[in-house]
Each structure stands twice: as structure tokens, then as C-alpha cells.
Image 1 (cartoon, helix red, strand yellow):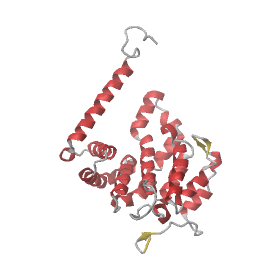
Image 2: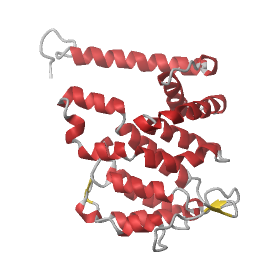
Image 3: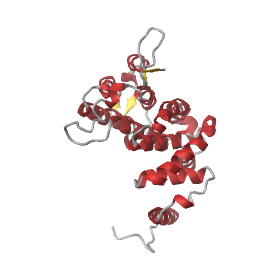
Image 4: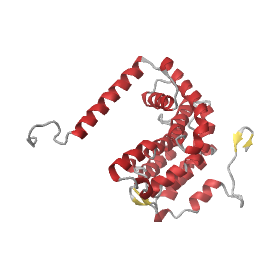
Length: 267
């Protein structure tokens, strides 16, 4: 639903904005975070919609880091992700961020930070992380890791909130949306979106020099059976070779419990 070209707030049956119902209807204090419990989250999450960009920046730091500390999915992570997805289209989220004449220090727009957080969290719960967990902890890893499983189940909802920003007028928003969408699209029900995302990945590779974003786009294209060779630069090849070398060294160290010493190391 739009009004004068701007998305309008999604409303519940009683007229309350959807994100407000999520905030007020969650027992945050009962949920675990990296800080202990989530009792601090309602205030921090509400500040993500403050008209002041500096307040929003502090709120993002206060709220998001504590629910993905050390790449961990906590009990509070899923409701925070639901709330973040629900506010992506709220006008206050971008107030003052995209004004070229705005005074004050340069900072990443809140919208970009939230998209990046959703993407990073999706990577912390992607298929590769599940495979690593199963190798280390056994086949029941995902079954027993309820928080990760709940986040993975939420991926279609999150992608639905992220997808409108793939066509945003700003490149930093478009690119953050794509990088977030890539791990979300691993969900079995979202395979039909990969062709569209591949087109956006090619656009990113034709326009962006950001190393992280380019690596994500190239990896996605290869994973989906596309040949990105014509869009791969010398810097991309060098980065891929460095990564492969680092992976080989890690595998070698993991296979050699002595760390390469004939005797116990002298420390």
C-alpha cells in the first residue's frame, strides 16, 4: 500500500502499526541476549525510529550487537529481526540520512545498517553454518539449536521486507539489500527469486568496487550456476586466490594437531 508514492505503515486490525504491536507484544525480558536478558531492547528498538540520525545510530549499536554477539543467534534475535523487517519502510528510519545538505558527521544511513545486519545474521544461520555445526556437534545440531532454526524459518518474511529495496535509487541501499537477500534466498521456498537476484548481482558487479559486496555477489552467482567471468576483475581473482590459500592453510592446521612441530612446541 502506498500514499503519494511512499509506503504506508502496515496496520493491525485495531489500527496499531505492525511494528508497534511487535514491540509491545513481546516479553523481551524473558529472552536471552549477549548481555543477559532483553529487557533493554524495547527502548533501544524504539529509538531506531527517532527523527535524529545520531540517536538512531546509537540505537542500532545498542540493540543489534547484543542479539548477534560473537555470531550467535539468541532467543531475542528472531523477534528483533521481525521488528527490523517491519520498520524498513518507515519514513522516520531515513529522516535526515539522505539529505545532501544535512550538517553533522558522515555516517552510514540507518536503513543501510539494518539491511546489513539482516544479511550478516542470515549468514550466521546459513546452510554452511549448519553444515559446520553438524560436523562439530552431530546431526542433531540444527534440531537442538532452536534459535537458529527459528531464524531460518523467518527468512521468507525477511526477504519480503528486503526485496523492495533492491530497486532503491541509492546504490548503497540497493547493494545492502542484495547482500542481505543472497543468504535469505537459500530457503527452499525462495529459489524462484534467485534469477531476479542474479540480475541485481550482475548490476552490482558492474558498478561497485566494495570488496565485501563483490565477493558476496560473485559467490552467489557461482552457487546459482551462473558464470560471472566477464564481470570478474583482476582484484576479484586475487581476492579469491588469497581466500583459497587461507582456507588451505586452515585445513592443513586442522589436520595436524601438533601445529607442524615434530615435538611439543616450546611454550
